[in-house]
Amino acid sequence: MALSLLQHIRDEQHANLSTTLQKNGLNLADASSLVNWVIPLVLAHLVDLNQRHGTGLVLALVNTQAVDGLWQTLDQERLIGQVQRHINSDGTTIIQSCNQIADAVLSELFILVDTASLGEDGLNELLEGQPEHLQGQAPEWVWSLSGLTVNNNTATPANVAEPLDLVAGMASLNQLMQQAAQQPAEPHMHTDHHVDIVLPTQRAAGNVTRILEPLIALALLLLLYVFFMHSHQQIVPAAPLVTTPVEQVSTNETPLIPEIISDESALPPLPEDQSQTINIK
Image 1 (cartoon, rainbow, N blue to C red):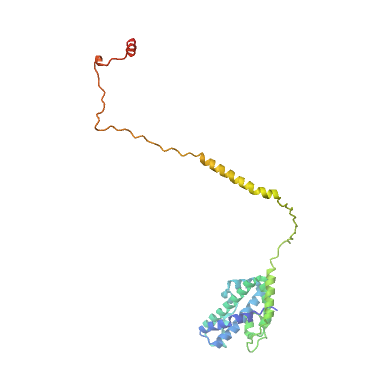
Image 2: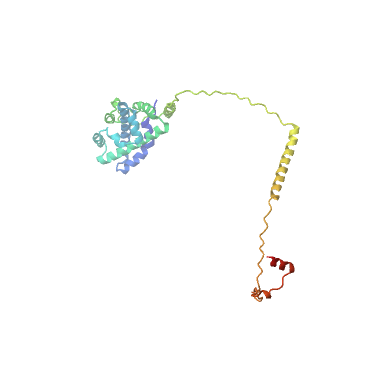
């Protein structure tokens, strides 16, 4: 048996909606009656749209939560007239209250469809099981106005809520979720082949190898140390550049001035060898 959307939404939204409608000016009794009429009206109309136009249209209304789109296929004037027979209120208040109830219904359906990942097939299966749950839950004019004529002549004088079978409802919802999860089937079957890989047995290291390993490591460390010290010894620091100060002549000393001799006889005599050389030239 499919989950009863009517009972589910009544349990979730009836108290909040009654409080909201009282803010519109309705008393508690009128607000409760309007909620008990409009919730089955919206659900019955969605079932009728699903039967006549397909689940795609209903899913679009649920996903967009388009209340205006829902009322386009309902006779609002007739709805106002039927409600005013039992409730003393103006048409504006009635339409405003009906919009708030319809919005709550679409919101609950959106949460249910999104949480269970129903898709079109799951939503169609869910809606197909609702007429049975809607029977006897609203006055006759609700079914005539919604288009769900299959529920005609099933109205009851009082709006007695159908007892909710929690076990059956949860089982139905779980079944829908499992079916939705199985919908995107893989195009091909994938078979895992288990292959046993045998690794070669590793021999344990001998006693000689265990003794030589630390010696080899120590030798490598010594070699690296010698190489490091040798490389540092080759680097000789450059000697600092030493500049010799230029000896300055004291201001008290008289600089040597070359004497200009105009007469050769005044020249000092040259050594014998040098004078001969000069005469030959």
